[in-house]
Length: 129
Image (tube, rainbow, N blue to C red; front, side):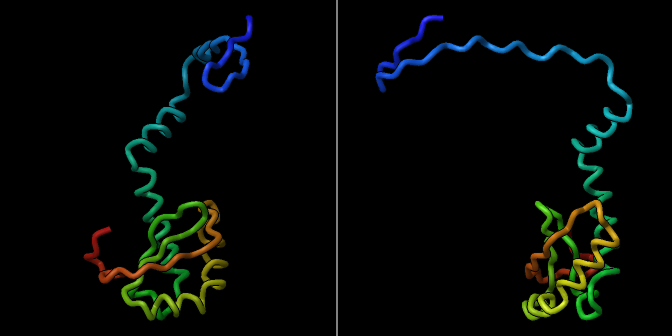
């Protein structure tokens, strides 16, 4: 193809041919279809959060067990909600041990850090999640 001139910058560029869309790969397995369906509906995350909450209750220090709850894991960082700002400081003292314990309990989550946030009703049974 002949090069074209860009009127604004005065540079030459070449028009690239459009790529063809990939051909259909054929039938999919039921496992891959179900996996995508569960991911789209959010059911997999809901089940995962129950597992993570159980692991948090086992790994959390005694001082945080009744007044904290696990949130989501994003980029390896677990959000933990605590009911009081003093508990954020308390978590700082226990962070290494808790990270090690969570690594044993839920290695698939890949938790590398914990971020504490204050939420007034954290840890209560009737707390909206």
